[in-house]
Structure formats: C-alpha cells, structure tokens
Amino acid sequence: MYLVLLIGALGVLGPLVIVASSAFKLEEEIFAYPMTLIPREPVLSNFIQLESHFPLYIWNSVKVTTSIVVLQFVTATTGAYAFSKLTWKFRDTLFILYIASIMIPIQSIIIPQFIIVRNLGLYNTHAAVILVSAFTAFGVFLCRQFFLTIPESLLEAARIDGASEYRIFAQVVLPLSTPVVMTLIIFSFRYFWNDFFTPLIYLTSQSLKTLPLGMADFVDQYNIAYGPQMAAALISIIPVLVVFLIGQRYFVQGVVATGIKG
Amino acid sequence: MAKTKSAQHAFIVASFLLPSFIGFFVFVLLPVIATVGLSFTNYSGGRTLHLVGLTNYFSAIRSSAFLGSLWVTARFVVFSVAFQLVLAFIFAVMLNGRVFARTFLRGLYFLPSILSSIAIGLAFALILNPKQGPVNMFLQSLGIAKQPWLTSPKSALGTLIFVTVWQSFGYYMVLFLAGLQSINPNLYECAELDGAGLLRKLLSITIPMLTPTTFFCITTAIIKGFQVFDLVYIMTGGQQGGGPARSTTVLIYDIYRNAFSSFRMGYASAEATILLIVLLVITTVQYRSQKGWVSYEAT
Image (cartoon, rainbow over all chains, first blue to last red; front, side, top):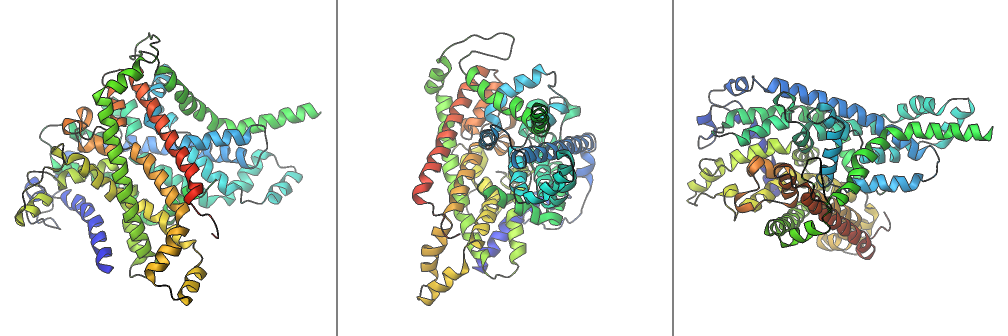
C-alpha cells in the first residue's frame, strides 16, 4: 500500500517539479537526459524574456479576479439572505432555478451571452468578463446552507430591538459567517485566477489579456521556447499554491459543501 | 398601513435579491432561452437573421464533424470519469486509515485540481514532447520506441484523458474521504465481531454506505467531462486546434469553433441546445435511478 501511495505522490509531484525546475533552466538543459532536478546553471533569463508583456497580464489578472471576487461576495451573501432569512412568494421556485443553473456549462450559453455583452457595448473590456462572472449560483447555495444554521431567534431578537434587515445582515449574519465567506472567496479566487474560457471570448486586445490568455499565446507561436512557458506557468501557479498552503481547510470545505444535498 | 408595510417588505426583498438576480437573469436565464431560440435561425453575428426552422438540426445530424465530436466527447467522458473515480476511491480508502504523512498526501493529491489547466497543459506538452521530452527519452533508454502522444490521432485523446485524470482525481478523492468519514465506525466494529474480513467490510459496508457520494461524484464528473476545453485548446493546437484529424475535437470545442471562428452562430446554437438536452437527460436519469441504488440510510 505504501508503494502505491509513494508512486502516486511521485506521479503528482513530478510534473510540478519539472515546471519549477525548468523555469530556471536554459533550453538545452530542459531536454537534457537524464533530467536534472536542480538546474546545473540556474538562470533567470526565462523570466526576463516575459518582461515585455507578462507584468501587464499579471496586473490584468489581479484586477479582474479581485473585482469578480468582491462582486461574488456581494451577490452571493445578499442572495443567500433573501433565500434563507426572508419570506416571499416564488422563493423556493426561484431557488430551484438558481440551483439548476449550476448544471449548465457556460460554453453552452456563450453565444447569446456574447451577443448581450456586445449590445451592452462591453465587448473587449474587462467589465465584460467581470459582469458575466458576478453571479454565482454555487455561492448563493453555499452561503444559504450556512445561513440556515444561524438560529432564527438571534434575528428575531435584533428585529424586536428595532434593527432593520440591512443591519441584521451586516451586523448579525455576516460576522457569524466568516468560515463560509472565506470558503467562497478562496473558491472564486482560484476559479477566476485560472479562468480561460470567458476571457478568451471577450478579450481580444493584447493590453487587456489576463495571465491564462497570455500563456495560451505560446501555443499559436512557432519556435516554441519551453523555458519562458514554464516560467509563466510557475508564476500562474504560485498565488494559488500560497493560498492553498495557508487555507487548505477552506478548499476542502468548499469541495465537501458541493456534495451536501440542498 | 398594511399596504405600506408589504410594499416595504417587497422593497427589502428586492434589494437583497436583485444583485444576484440581475446577473442570473441577464447572463444565464436569458442566454439559455436565447440559445434555443437562435438554434432555429441562420444568425451569423451580423445585424440580420432569418428563421430557418429545424434546418440547423438536420445539418447537424448529417454532419460528420458534429457526429465525430459527439463520439469524441462520449469516449472522453466515459473513460475520464471511470478512471478518475476508481483512482479517487482507491486513494481515499487508503488515506482514510492511519497512514504515515496522511494530511500531506491528501493535500498533495488534491493540489493539481486547483491549479490552472493552462499551466498544466503547457507542462505536459513539454513532458510529452515527442522528440526529446523526458517521457520519450526514458522510453528510449528502455529500448521502447518513442511515442507520438498528442501528435497522433490514435493517442491524442487518450493522452488528454490521462492528463485530465492526473489533474482531477484528487478532487473526487476529497469527496470520497468526506463520505468515508461520515460512516458510523460502529458498523465496522459489529462486522469485525461477526468475523468479517477487510474485503467483506469493503463490499458490505464501505461501498453501500458511499453510494450517495458516488452518485454525486459521477454526476459532477460527467458534467465536468462535457466541459473540457482548456486542455484541448492548450495541448492540441490552440485556435485552429482540436487534435490531429479532429481526434480531440469535443462537442464544446466544435461549438466554439463554429460560433467564434466560422460565425455560424445559429448552427452552433443548435449544437449547444443538443448539449443542454443531453445534460438534462443525464442528470434526470441519474436523479431518478439513484432511488434504485443509492442508500441514504443510517448516515
């Protein structure tokens, strides 16, 4: 059994180590056989070659991802409050529609979405990518499940004291919801930091590209240089890796939460 | 008085609901309806469109490109789902007990599933480079011929499935681990008292008790399988890609190419509608059939 676990671990780790070490190698050494684990002569030239475009791609990714995470936090928590703590007609029907939309792949509705975005005059802007990603059915679901566990008596007490629903939301419910909000933020950060399809559809200008789009440009080039590719891959992996090392339990909670039946 | 109160309540509900509802309505619900609508037109991205009835659907079912992409998608989904879940189950069972470096290993297997598919695709393009990649150099040193991997129509899809399994099995492993932890340990103790061995416990307790998790994993993995795009794009040729002889052109990729390279948006909408129907049927069938084989008892 330990043998299987070890082979599995090496199999998973291997490609990641190759990315990290190749990022610091010259082209000849990348394909040297047998492969060297630690570069014989470590170089930074691969990163320097990325200098012309990638700082801008990274900045675009930071900007777009941060905006989406903030918007998702707002839409998911307010939506979840409406679906868990307020009563209104058609509430449960609409909730089922929200849940059903989790099953719909973005690629299957991209054509009309693209037409809508174009008609709003947002084609080839960051706003397009940010706005189409602002709604998260999963986030509403995740937060709603958590809000349901907050005792109604707590809210009633605040209502009797004359607190408005906005106040209860901001000062009673949200402060109690740190774990679920962390899960949501971490989940949407990693999803949109890596997201490729939506930016691919909506962004065409070189100056607007996000990091995954910038990396994909390597594919359409002749004379592929592997060194800079691995350097770019490493850059895109590191932020997610750091967040993972700090907040691994939130990742796991998020995955598990998707498995809980609504 | 009562009227102003209910108006006030409606205002409060609306203010909480609208932020998510606008996004849902404009960018999800409306596009779903419009996808079906556009599928009956010859829309090509311009200002005009004409109704063409079912023409797009008839073209699709007679098109070898469409049927080919369905076949590629079906094979991709079946094999990637099967391998991912079997591996995930095996590793979850192994890591559920007391094992050296358990937390570290769980984290490690899970890690690739949260990393960028684009970065991973680039990494495997290097590793599987047919001329001088480390895998082929290793094979050569063993006296085995170098393999074409992504560059041959025979092996491209299999290679894509391998990378997908490598990246994602850890995700399902985490789900299985959560399922395993919810099994009441008393069940195992009772079985042991009755003299049940490891295999017996696995077959009579672990697998039946995990059916809800398994059901959920299958549904999720199938839907994700239908959505594979990034790896196809990055590993088999970018904008003009889809693999040698269309061997990795999955349905989503065909839709993308038709809509955004050829601007056959009406036709691509028909393909997308067919995809939506297929997914609807699969989830409904699974949801119905789970009554037969999923046990939710005693959890």
